[in-house]
Length: 399
Image (cartoon, rainbow, N blue to C red):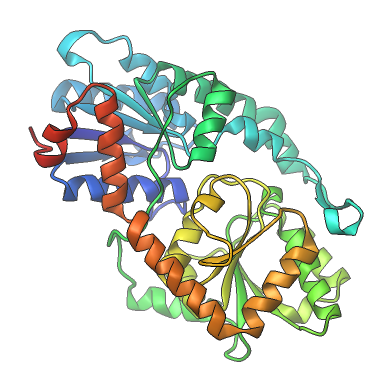
């Protein structure tokens, strides 16, 4: 079976969880015997931008379909809406099966650009969207929603990384039967070079007390201000916890102001934008990974932490509870509640042996459910539901 995966963002050029999943799935499908081609911006012309990709990918994909004749063309996110629209017009043997894997609903992404509150402080507003976030909500999300709806409605098969996201796609884009192909990790996609290891070492905090780690782009739906409030609450209860933040973004300056106002300057280390290798080195030394988001799809950073046996403390939102089991593989807390989050942070650092038990349980759960061959099997089952015989594909995918 020939499979063409179309994606706007791809590592190593782009630091993108969605792009990473394209490569993880490609690896799993190849291991199962499929011929897989991945088409990104670099195959659409010279210096094609992310914004131009939805339009420039159309001719590149049509050429691949004409010359390579894939059985399946799969797009990722709303960026593939125009590609799907074009291919849906084809007839007969020249028309491949059209699949869309959408990591999030942009209707929910737009709703997530809102004031952040702390329900444990009388619903006090602890952060407001900055100008760039408001512009994203007003100008860019309507385009993403329109393309996302087009992608979902014109595809033969719709996929999502979690049951929660599948329901969101169905409700927000007006479609039915969205199947789940979970995000995974484990494919040997790259290796750390000596130079990247040196760069990673420069990002690391000084060796000393255990630290908590937060990874990702600093935007309002990541809930970082609530995490800082939780650190302050833990300090007031006699626990001075250290936090390392690996990532950058539009909220960096505002977060540093909050940090200073709460008297946390010495407790927070800003590592800035990190490569995958740098983030991995920070993660492996962390007492726990913290994901205090108000909205997510199925975060790759959680899967990577579980793969390393690092316990996870996360908000019980979106697809996260489908991965993290509260009390077994980590801690789940209600979003926007600093007291509950502070309690989980204190517990993870105060009892490292118990935290390691949860981390190891997370690794085992990952091995059982969230490796590339699991994604491949779910993918084959989903594609078979669209008319391809499962036994033929799984036992002889090249047939």
